[in-house]
Image (cartoon, rainbow, N blue to C red; front, top):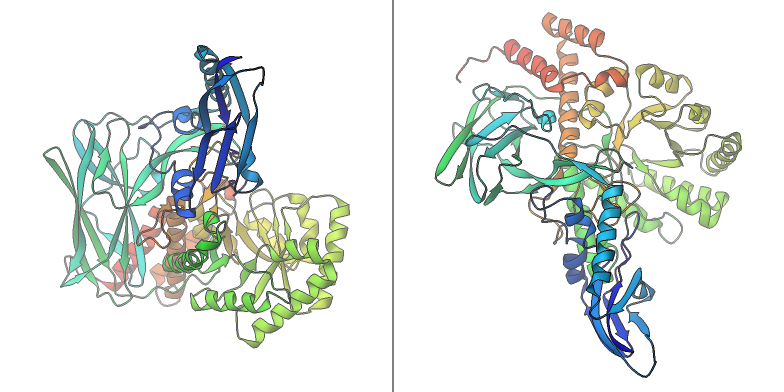
Length: 617
């Protein structure tokens, strides 16, 4: 009997891409309501799912302050216990997920040391589990704005690029421009002014994003957290500056297909505390048309998870799906492993409608159906799955829709028993529909035994992503694609060209582990090129810099294909093409030493010379 301080930790942190999301939660202690939380879907998303979006690594605290301290949804209450009745805890609300209880602490009311000890122990355990580091940039001496190579952002020794050297581009493409803004003083009200590049009355569209500092695992399942600014958020006015870390600024400059050639001049001006600095933006648009990449290049894409959990958000989910397609196609991506309904008898019409949507959005190359076989074979068995696939293929062919690739192996076991099982499955699928094409994601050298069962083999560094590895895939009768390689620009561009890849897919555009802004709450890091936002279809959505790197790799590939087309009629183009074929490494481990900016600049400089563009025009 007496007065007690009760602390309850109520939240399940979630796993994979899910967080429990009850909209009502009630807790009673001895019949007294101590918490009654009620929300609508938008309120829950804002208060829980997006709660970590605003804070920045280093600038707003360490990993414990940002991610550990608030975990668990702690509720505190005081309670008078009389008559020997003890303590009764009642949990109620919106479904069984509202009744989760992670921990309970009861201590005499004057025993606040107990809660302090628990919190201290939590902090110590968190610190023992997670270590963190941040780049150490040289201290700023004033206000500076410098253009740097896009892929070298986290290198503190990166030398700035020549501000007077124009960037070369072709109509129907785009350029990514990376800058560093730094100040010797803190300022939350710095201002950015963008003057878009202009020539002869034609202005090029510019999208400005700035890097938001976040902690990320240095590898997928690592416990080392590294501060980086890959998360690119819209705008930057006002812009926060801090002497501890520079601010990354990323401009995406579009060069529409009808853009006249010439020199386009613009600028970016940064103002802080009465000081201003300006960085010129100089682009030279060449009078040529680049060919398309000629390969399926893209990402795995799912629905935005938080929009799938609540029925009232069905319209927002559908709108976001279309906006994702428009965004990815606008960046130059040509292929997807997209979210698709199951093509069984009940879902076949919806499946065809989704294929029509994808084709209308510009994704007409083979699409990888990543999940259908996995889901149907467990639910319906192999023969019924074969019938569903055959019906979907026939319906797609009749409608002139893109032919799906059906994934049948996802980084599978390497034993002989599994190989025999997969052989039986693929035989059943092919017997049910002779026209189907089967694919597998292979990440181990022993998976080479599975190649005769597949039409398309997606291979990564675990299987082998070298030229010899892809040649072996072809000899086994499968079409070799690359997938899940860490340098997205090289994988989509110079390396894909060098090793003869037939396609490339990167996992994943929307696969956060639980909380999308907490790297420590799942067994792996968050994987997301597209970040969740408060409203669907933001005019300038948040992106991961890796997505822009992939887009730059696609542009690299388009320039390589232009060089191939120019080589038969231009000896200098033929010489450069031969040099690249001879010197680009066929081994993925050696490709990391390549500088794609330098390689592309050699091609674009040759293009300018061959076209004899007068300087200054």
